[in-house]
Length: 187
Image 1 (cartoon, helix red, strand yellow):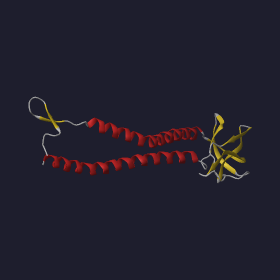
Image 2: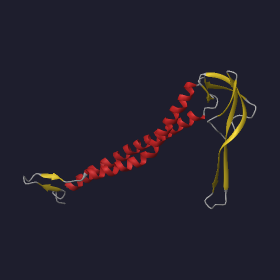
Image 3: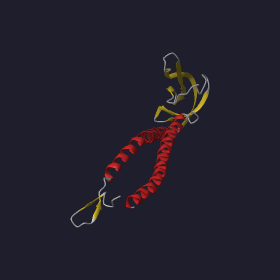
Image 4: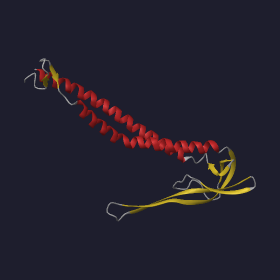
C-alpha cells in the first residue's frame, strides 16, 4: 500500500493528512443530543415540580386536624389493546379534606391522587396549611409529589450515566482498532 494515499502535499513536499474530523464529531453530537433529550427533560420536569412541592411544604406551617369527606375521582382513563377488543379503565382518587381554621370551615382537594384511595371517608389526618392562604395544604403522610419528582430525576440521571459509561466503553474499543488500522496502512 502506498504511504502517501491519504496525504496531500502542499508545495514543500511535506505530507499533510487530509481528513474530515468535524463531520464525524457533529454526527456523534447530534446522536448524543437525541439520546439525551428524554433524560434531560425528565430531570428538568422532575426538578421543576420538586421545587414546587417543596415551596408548598415550606409555606404550610400551621398544623390542623382534617377529616376526609370525599375521595374525588380525578383521573379516569381507558386504554385499549392493540386489536381494540381489550379495554382497561384506570381511576385515581384524591382526598377532599375538611377542616376549621380561625372559625371558618374549609374544604380542600388534595393535589395527590392514588389508586386505591389513600384514605377512607371519615378518616382523620393531620395536615399542614398555609396560615396566609388556608386553601394551600400539605399532607406529610401523603407526599406522592416529591417521591414521583425524585423518581424522574433519578431515572433521567441514571440514563445519562448509562450513556456516559457506554460511550467510554465504546471509545476504549474503537481506539485500539484505529491504531491497528493506521499501522496496517503504514506497512
